[in-house]
Length: 328
Image (cartoon, rainbow, N blue to C red; front, side):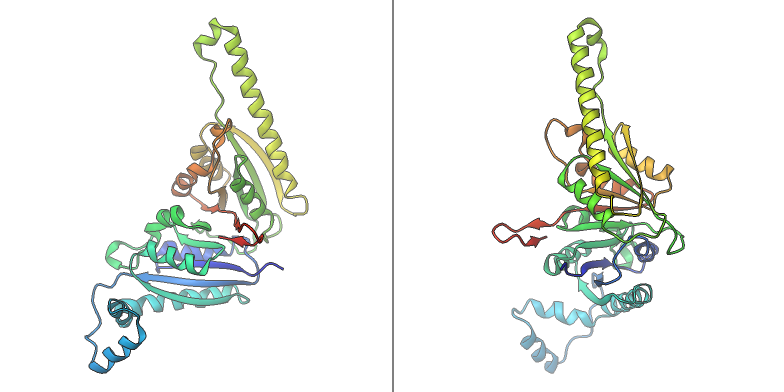
């Protein structure tokens, strides 16, 4: 039996962080899950100096003297403000997801580093962040480091951009596929979630065909090679999309497929915008072989940065050698 999904939600009180909370209602997430709401602050104004009794208590609570400042800073006004933000977000989540187990976590330091540190320790299945956060002056920055978290996290990451929709209305999802294990994981992730009735999925493969060029008009074998290579790539993509469709056999989602010519960094974003998609799912890494022109994972960060909707970058769990257990 699979354990409950674990979700780490980075929250800073910004409009984008609020949108990320709304977006979770349209992310197909399970009814039961474990969630940690995390707020990070870089403390500017220190708390009042500790008394001699507090110094003694702090010394007992830490392993090395350098930890004393960090521990005592948790009493600062900035940390208390971060706790209030996290509590507010947790309360809202409990209303929207009454069966989730929700706790809060406050950290002091670099937002990106602290989120990654928490993720490495807790090992969530998914990290959720807003696309932009407060200005640096607010010192509760999370959204502005979303790209850094996306690059360094060992689990899936959702860069959320909420839309004003009713909770149970159909959702539109774009999935970019390139034949890699990561993009196959993105397909499985979407197929395995709980979507509102009538939700739609569009699976898109993007190809950059070879151009015959002027030389092919002078050398027919070159032209024939280019045409045969492009046709082989097209046939491969059709098989790839058919395999993707197999994942949705037991799903009630309405699924369609499409092959586009161009650059996935541009075409996936444009397709999602034209179709008014709620989210784009892509794999975290691509592959390097004869089909390198279809690589999506290498451009997932660009898609996440440019898209007008939410983007979820899927990192399939790693299998620990020797015992078959999943690890992240």
